[in-house]
Length: 498
Image (cartoon, rainbow, N blue to C red; front, side):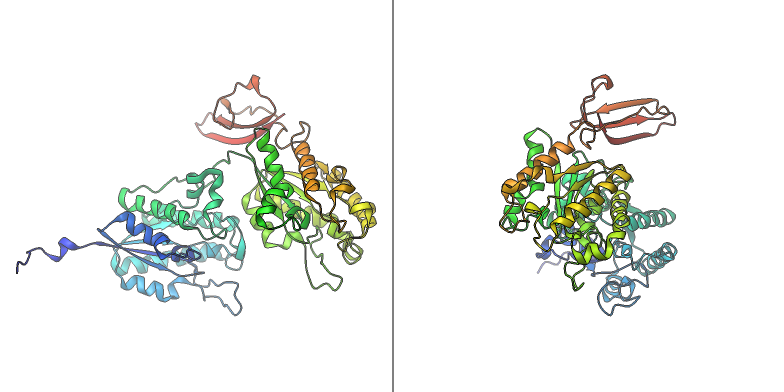
């Protein structure tokens, strides 16, 4: 027998421990080989041994918990879990920590949280350093497409600077995962999730690629965590059952026939690439405390629904159309709460503007019931004579453009229940919206800029294909403006010109 005289060190591999939450664990990814640590193993090759120590719902903070019944502060602290103890026992040479997402939940991010997060992260890093003195890489949390479980971008943008500051103090590498999906897929970044928070296999591949680049090449991605400029406009169409296309058939039918889908097709037919999101959500009211039934057992305020966060707020749309108000026209809603209407509508608009201060919001007059009849629990006369005037008054007071969808809808556009629209009704509404959104005097697509920035040394204008356009040749449309200032800084922003 020939025994090779090679030392064990000749076969030594670098051990990589992937610490993190459900995104590291690979929640919603069925095939283990598609989870990011497994894909990382393939990318790094035989010289590395990668282990997945992810655990669902975990936080950096030692008092973190979640929304499940019975959960108490501290239940979701990663350092209290077996996976963390296993990671230490692994004695890794390299540690990748991807935490912070669950810290952004509203129950976990309070006034004291910034200081607690910093302390608890440093304590974790001290333990890891003292355990095996590995190379440590901190990965920034992913952007979230949906704000389910109250995970949200606002809090993440308070957490990320703390992670970067701790890394800077300790000389650690920071992997920018927060904008990785946008940098890879542009406007289609949101296709890389299974549920709006957890990535699919392709999203996990991008994470693994970023981590592999950091380990193998010392490259960490952009330092800028502001979201890249969206090239093509995004419109969220807010509404209820009619917007959703409830009676048009299955999901494939709704994705083709409901008016948001028809609106997107109209833009495409006219040579404009616009993404339109159907944010229609069941029976919904502008009134925050509205109910579907007179017994008050089914709350239906649009502002309180999780899909408002996932289909509107977290997407930070360029334009929003609000086709609501019909379900407010019931005796138990309007009769009880009509004095709250202006304030509740203003809260809805304010929430949208907080997600994107540059958003253009359009107030829609909803189609009445056929012949003003009582249908779908809606009082047709109340809708016409009380709710719609209140909508118009709100739009006038707050100087918001109005698109009257009722003008586009006639008797032939209703289904037999006198409430839901048929296919031609959805087409009529889409056409009316297209007309309103592209009118030069009020559009987000055709509205205009105004002004010159007197502090900028140079102002350059480009179309959406990246072609520079002389300012004297600007037509109505959307443009990308690049400004350079005397201190050398530049800004890039999207604007609309009339």
